[in-house]
Amino acid sequence: MTTKIEARGISSEFATPSGPMLALRDVDLTAQAGEFVALVGESGCGKTTFLRIVAGLLPPNRGEMRIDGVAVTGPSREVGIVFQQPVLLPWRTAMENVLLPAQVRGLPPEQACAEAEALLASMGLGEFLDRFPRHLSGGMQQRVSIARALLLQPGILLMDEPFGALDAITREQMHLDLLNVWRARRPTILFVTHDIAEAVFLADRVVLLSPRPGTVRQVFEVPLQRPRVPDQRFDPVFAATCREVKHAMQTNGEGEG
Ligand SMILES: Nc1ncnc2c1ncn2[C@@H]1O[C@H](COP(=O)(O)OP(=O)(O)O)[C@@H](O)[C@H]1O
Ligand SMILES: [Mg+2]
Image 1 (cartoon, rainbow, N blue to C red):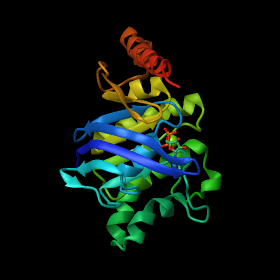
Image 2: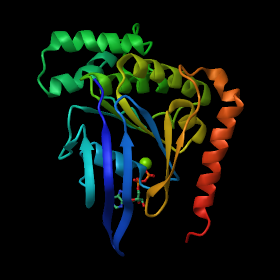
Image 3: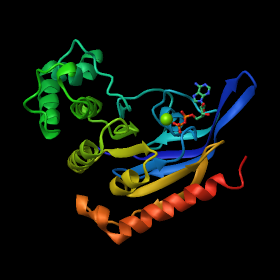
Image 4: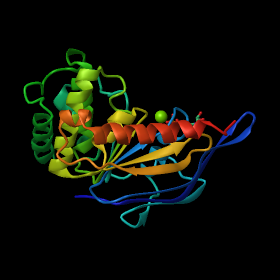
């Protein structure tokens, strides 16, 4: 179940007290079915705005967003979303939180329960189904929210700085767990981060957005083999790719403002 994302000439504008502000300008971006694409750029360059447009939560002012060739007109169950904060309901257990999207849509519980259990187990939470969020660590809570986003087997998973609030060691484990679940289910992933090393470690391609207005500055292929393993972070190719993205990002700032 994989799905292609095509953005063509996407522009997005917000009204502000001092007049309209262009957040995105003419963004072209394609993610092939099953591809893992990272979107990087400074804070405020429009990454979240772009994800909201892909998710059908915000219409673009210009341009077209297509999912498998069909124009996006609103939210769809083809798209799962993971935010920086896990946003779990505190009065529901891990399992009950993961089941929420099925309940909201009135889907039969048996199938949803089996799927939720399988997802939680594959995220290493098989023993924690009945725990409430307050009894789970930040990393475990974020695993629950990833399982919830995948419950309806979306073709697309959008992730907005999902590991930004986690410590480095937890984050490295999350990277491996995410890559495992991606390999098993193969959704198309659009992963937003401002951490270049994270983007390079996870993605097939890294798309760099330049700030104000956000526009695609450069796209980098990541020439690292899969499956990715932690030691690849010491690979000279890894360092060289990170350096390339970093330099492009810094060149960005110059000549502006
Ligand atoms: N709802 C909104 N109303 C007005 N301005 C907004 C709104 N959402 C985002 N912006 C502005 O659009 C720009 C891009 O924001 P955002 O997409 O959140 O960037 P990023 O996720 O890369 O940090 C920022 O300047 C931000 O202040
Ligand atoms: Mg953001």
